[in-house]
Image: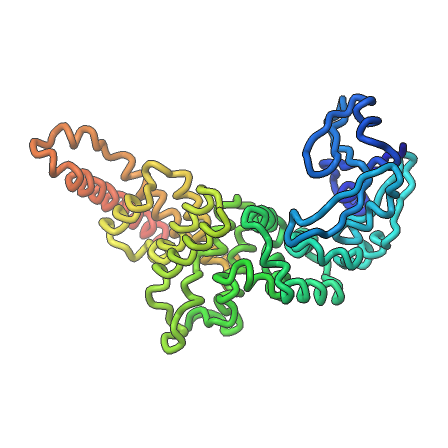
Length: 415
């Protein structure tokens, strides 16, 4: 029985990156032999065991045989006669198909180390086509390893997978899982660029794919269409280290622009309502978690109004805070402001430009929170007037803080 470290741990070690988790392959063993050594079995699809002390995963060397469409359409064969090379041959990319023996020897039958040096993402072999999740995984690796390119033959293979309909069998949960992971990588725009180049984006997220080639606005750089702008916004969210809900909101904030009638371009009148409708459908289809979905819908509806924050009347600002539930969900409203900042900066030449609109809303929210709604309610003889009285008190508070803010800015200008 021989044990090898495999996959990402070997890859990251060779790249000089921190190794968080180690996966092991055991060659020449049986399930009974693993149980006799105290390993605990996990999973039902194939024999994987947890080490009795470290809880690290040890999988028996196995081969795979395609039996149907999609991620689950495989039969696995694990036996003592399965070799390490046969196990590595079923993996997706050459850079993930390396192993290190207990003595330190590198096992690299598919030249993954050379592809690491050349910064190339290349499929191991023809079995790549059997699992459509590999398209998403490769795109995610492109977002992580931002200076790696996709081998031309691998891109051609992925195109054929999409054209054959294999990508259509991806289950929504797995699509979201990989999209979410890709959004959290260093440069998530590359995930969508790779998916678009092989045709998978049109199949998996047609609402996003339709943005490309659609003019943004007349005041935008002519080379930045709505799709490119969206990717710039997503990368801004990654650059600032914002969380998944903000990054997803950045991705879907402008979906309605992909359906603007040609005779209106480059104007996008009413695109907010269309964006909300399309984002709602996308979230339902991919079963996006509630926190990411809710922020995305708020961003799609309100980002234009927030950008105009300095021009809005105090009553409009208060209405916006109320409609976005900012008083009860201030953390989510702060995420909305973060997403709006990314939208503002997702334009050529504005990456580091000043954007003080969030401060307008932060000051207004603080003022609104200072209004004692309970005291107002107790003072109202006619209870039906309470909501309006509270609203008016909030408006008065925002007017006051806006007046003070204007004085501060005037003073700073004089200095």
